[in-house]
Length: 524
Ligand code: HEM
Image 1 (cartoon, protein in one colour):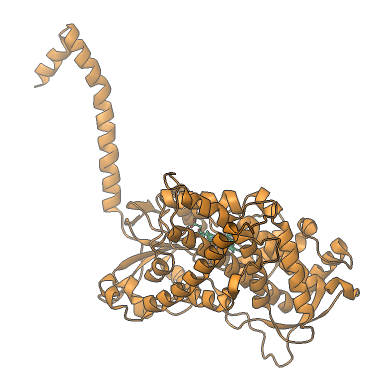
Image 2 (cartoon, rainbow, N blue to C red):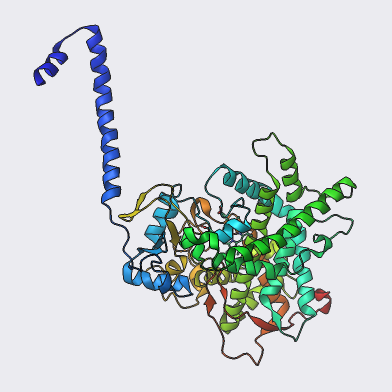
């Protein structure tokens, strides 16, 4: 054989020369590919799964999970290490708890981990993951995300919608003024303001005075949304043991279906009102086409590659409404709670507000001057990240994270709460200290993985520019226009949270406002 091989190399004619050249080039390539394939196969098959607790047959670790999942997972990371795994029913879950490993999932292998694996309740309310948040990483997701970012959240559109923000925040100040001396639910105030702003941006208002809530369909929306968020975060046997999903043992799917009927009614009413207004020539735009109009026009372009159907439009509107309102109101409530809990912080904020606005009302264009309030908001996001496990990711192929095998289709959580409370990342992490955000450059873009309240990588929250603006505007206005105190009958100050898809304050913050600015006309 060897002789034959040597002979072949020695023979010299044109055909053999060509074959030899092809062989010389292709053999190393084939060997290299073979090595890559086998070594990656070997790596994947010989790697261990991440460590973790052994559970019971069939149900796995389900019976041992307590309600505050983010804190339970953080405790488990102290025992099993920065990455651990657990079986919940038939589903393999992985929890990543360190900056280094979050970087592998959200950055280095971002593309691999860009799918979602939605629970049954999410599939039900999003018309089968036709929204952005629960959709897998596919063309539909890219199209929807691009539409949202370019048409709603672009700088140009945010600038042209400033009038809505100003109008709604002033209305909120008027409403709170009317309740001076009485108990005010801070979350409700922030939720209503954000809902008005977002609905104005989505389906606008005609100059003819028609409201952005035709027929009052949005009445009670906050309660409906809270129920939806609660169901999204509630453990469901149907997710963990899919062969039982048909029975819907806990009735979660049925409950979500009822809420979807409610949502459908809202969207159908709004779309019908829009079509009628257009037909009657009533649409007097405020110098811009609103998002609903853009979506309906895309829907009518049947042959376009980006054409949308009605369920996709509803899925998208649902995402924007819920993603914007619940997170923003939850954060306003947490910031106000921390401020009331830390009188020194409150004094510094008030001094800054007085320096920037004098005894006048808050103007949006001056908000970037509020560097201390900005640090307070960031510190609150660190201590109380509203989505402490982000939204679950799922790899589309088996891969290696930190030397462990993560099988294709596993459910992977990045434990932001653990990262934000890890003494390796933050000195005295349980102390509320806004000053830490005054040093160095901190933003919400997920580049520094020590701080990722909006996530990181291609699945990062696209709503950061609007979320940040609204948080600062609402907080600055509530704090500059009013003094706040807790009701006297309030027992001990409560800072505990309750895990959910959006993790909220366990006991809603109720506080009593009083007038802070001397000029009464500023409240009218
Ligand atoms: C204080 C305000 C907000 C906070 C704290 C927040 C936080 C988050 C977080 C943590 C995620 C998950 C990221 C991940 O899985 O890695 C997310 C996703 C998302 N957020 Fe926000 N958000 C806020 C406001 C908004 C606003 C105003 C909008 C839209 C107008 C929005 C739209 C979305 C959407 C569509 C997603 C899904 C993105 C995807 O899966 O590709 N959010 N948000």
